[in-house]
Length: 359
Image (tube, rainbow, N blue to C red; front, side, top):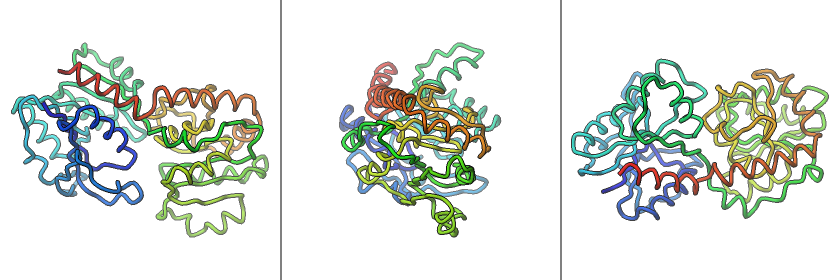
């Protein structure tokens, strides 16, 4: 029996999860992927378990094809974990091949995301029916899926609680004490339309935030405001750090901040910030975030503001940043949730147990 993952690519943040699985499953484990330029997220080299099968090409109308995937060898009793994106036609055909040859299929995907549409969501659910087991990004998605099912789900189903490798963060993280930190906040992620970064910038216009310094890690060079960075920096207290991937460099910034603020649809950036013990401020429409919002608990790990409302963001932020006792308690809660639930080591343990159940 082999364990085969099919992925469009392997971003660097996914490496610890796969390395952990490779140590558990040994030579029977491999990841089939397409090589692409992911910039700073591109892994430094290949691994014994990673098999580059060819390019992923756009075949039109928003659909893709992974070259050589359908031709990949499949044996009876293989367990294939497919990245459940209906746009990859080659994956659907490969799944049919696996089933015909006596293998088992695990469907791994979001149940919903910030951009989920009813039609696409229904299509994913229909395609899942061919799978022998289902893996969603979080336990919250599992609960929602089972709640909305009209028929009983007999297949094994797992919520991974998608996270990051917290070990290197522990090496550089300083103990959080809001009383000893300046009025500095952290934005961690791409300053793209998805992040609604302009809402955060607009909030800095309010007098209540005149003493707040914004630290930006991971800005997107293609975003239009980059042409006006000097103007923004002159108007507000902003430090721009670019696309940092070295955890020691990230820690130098995160360890100064009182809060993490993300105005748009937050995902793994939330987990990253919580791993530093940073209380979080995100918008209040929790259905319009990525699955990782499951780690966030209102009043426990942070607070919310009204979506697309810079005044609401400014009001909540100015109030929240001064409540040091509350922030210290939130920080402890953030660390507890990430270190016990939303990390790659926990993900791997859950997945190994899931495979045993599937057998």
